[in-house]
Length: 232
Image (cartoon, rainbow, N blue to C red):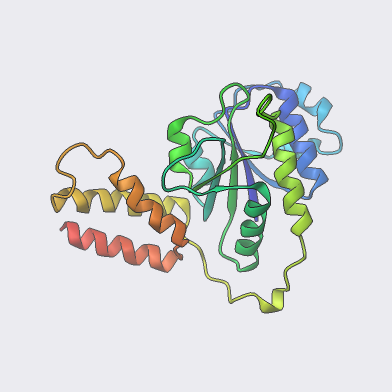
């Protein structure tokens, strides 16, 4: 399963256009963090045959709430961040499809607001990055256009994988569970003297290796228990 996550969308027409794109390509799950407009009448005029999607997005206050139950969180951003992979849309689609086929959890694809995109803090809390290749003269895409590119890549892959060859489902650790592991890691490192001064990037870089490993829920619980025991 894939969830489209919009952070601070400001333009109601973009909301309607995103809903239409989702219906075009069979996506149903979406969340909106820090909704920047309440003009749903304007959104409905654009959401042709997808008006019902505007009645049921998951509207939350923060990105963390929108992705708490997701196993893999991908930020759409042109930035490069140490410790995070930067993937093309087709690669994101392939990995999301593989996770879904294996029953390992939901993938969240996160889009920032129309003016400034995602903040540094929001990019940092996502697991990986993705960007749409575009001309340097005009690198940014309209929000709904960007969602369309990922939705199309996901639709292209739909049904290609032979379910009979898929491994048995293993529940992937959710983002909320990984956040608890991060907090326990920070506490253990401070208790052990590794973090004697400012934290800087140490915890983020160490946790990045666990995020790339795609821990199962059982593995995340084991890490949490081990780190809490070490801290004591």
